Length: 115
Length: 114
Image (cartoon, each protein chain N blue to C red):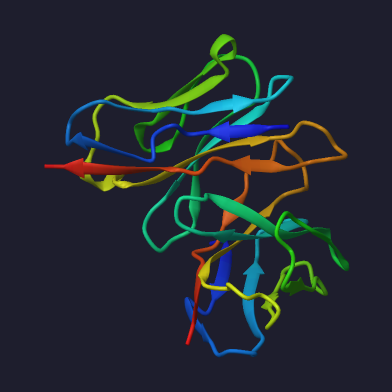
């Protein structure tokens, strides 16, 4: 069965420091992969997505993610974190199949940014 | 601007009461979804609909009901059979029901028990 694991429940980084949020998935083929961000009391917003091709994808707000098939990972990165990046981040995988479509979300990683 | 509107933002339910959460989209999307979000558990799928007059149960449909009479609207009713309804409810839509489609989310409704 497909699964998405975000090993870190929460992470604290200093403003201006680099950030990496981890995501591991379990899926037989190359999956569709997404990262979403959720600010408190709001819905999720798509940051970026990976379907195929270049394994380094760029997203909005200066985020990027790298797909590593050998490690079944799709980690999210940002070179320099801003206080406004404090939020919860969700990794998700989409089923390629047309019959049993499902998007599975990880449990989320809450990012705290300290001044 | 196109988007998804959920209302109300906060809702309180009394014991034995059914309540309905509204979700409207003007993105012309075929597929719509309802998720429940609890702390530390991510998003769990309640119901989804891929076309008008069709909907399917998700992973945690018990105690909930939906309808899809119009493309734009996908209301969720939390019935009295749902014994633990306190949660944050998110409505989402996508162009079609497919694994490659990103989902667009509303800002959620927080439901609490009085």
